[in-house]
Image (cartoon, rainbow, N blue to C red):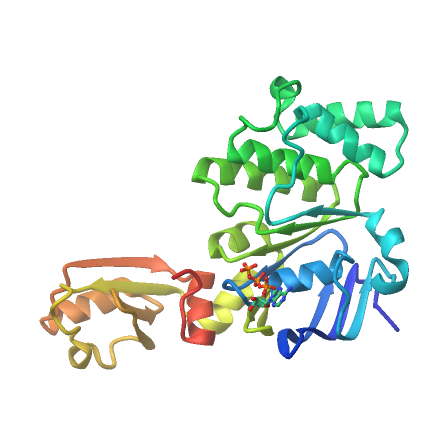
Length: 309
Ligand SMILES: Nc1ncnc2c1ncn2[C@@H]1O[C@H](COP(=O)(O)OP(=O)(O)OP(=O)(O)O)[C@@H](O)[C@H]1O
């Protein structure tokens, strides 16, 4: 099968659990050196896809090549060149930070001296040198994530799979993690990231696919997707909860209008102009906000639902 040089090449890839299809025939090409995202809500099939790519779950049907190899035949050879950051940290709580790295290095059959030197480098990369001899348990969530990422790099992988890397972290910890991932990309590591955070996808991903219900519903760079499926700006209007939103008065003012339970979204090139026109028609929201379109708007346009409820 031709894989046109992609690090991950999938065609009509399917994953079933009994009668249920979690992944329903997706096509994906991940190019060397890029940060590629799977964006979608819980249950979209992102983790199921990652597990097939990571050679821990066999595909049901379709084609899949990872690093030019077949996950079912060449799993060990692929895994030796992969780094995997699972959704939940599975660090060894009884070991120190440094020992977690050492143990993992030995799984890969690396020499003791190589692992020691590599661990020191990774502690520095993960900004954990000062905590190297502490046990894992008292570390913050962000530190544990950084350690899990450091551990996944012990074998110098070409391709790093990150399943929801910042779920549950506070904003500061997320930004620090993003910064580390940027650094990895600069160093030539190809990243595949699943996320249901549209800001994460926008910040990190060169290209992404939007997944919903086991299918890919759109593909492109964040700016391409926004350009294709949304307008430059969005005007958000909120009204008192007991007042019906004045849809008739807003009719025709924007390119598109979406009514969410707590607000109206009016899509337009110039949000301020729409707001002025709405005021002119006597519309009096309790609050208004003009912002640029995001991938959340793309997802809403494509599926009629918001990404994170
Ligand atoms: N081992 C399994 N057995 C049965 N169903 C499964 C199994 N693993 C996943 N599923 C189902 O497949 C669907 C896709 O799950 P998956 O974990 O791939 O989604 P996701 O996009 O990664 O979402 P999440 O962020 O919740 O992990 C879900 O409906 C899930 O319940």
